[in-house]
Length: 162
Image (cartoon, rainbow, N blue to C red):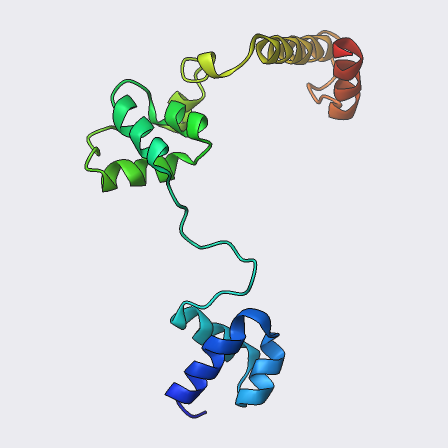
């Protein structure tokens, strides 16, 4: 197959965003994969696609810099609705990278999430955990395996919580 030339690139740049790849491939005498690959190299996107890079608003950046060292990365991630890894990457980018990554075990110790849940959410979790504990205890006492019917438990939970 011939190399891509300026004419092909120009045609692709003009038509890629609103033309099916199969049509482009037929016109250019290339495979659909080759068209998609070249479009990626040229940084072209189809209409309606979101940009690849997540953008950060200035208030979000201010929140991170103002709360660095005060809040855990997990707390910042929950507040900003972003992943832990994106928070770490942004801290690194801002030069605030002297913070240790928290392990998954530390992340789930109630300490990090305590202030992020409403009282109702805490109550629902407590009820669910109590039901789970009761189901395990009943299974153990009756000599059955500790296998729990999750569908039955979900229905019991729904009836209990209304």
